[in-house]
Length: 106
Image 1 (tube, rainbow, N blue to C red):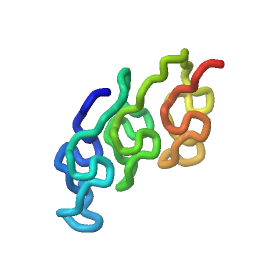
Image 2: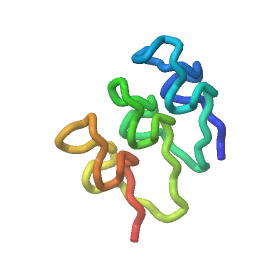
Image 3: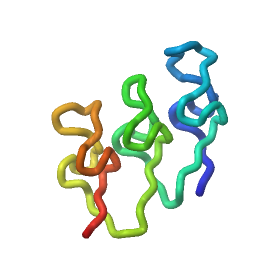
């Protein structure tokens, strides 16, 4: 596991969009400013590593900004071509890879 800066709040520990209040606790890191991500990992293709899609936490990475790479062999998702986005609406994650941009071979 690696402890990395929370992408959703940028490490501030507060809601980056001030939806509830500018003092509200970040819903991803719960105010810690850091999150744990299993190694190896890569930036989330669905949110581009920002942890957010519009003003919501990314469903591909859970708002962390990074997705863990499985130990099994993977290939680029054939449905989204690795973008992590649903073809009908880019704000939704791909149903085949769940926004990760890859699928496990086998």
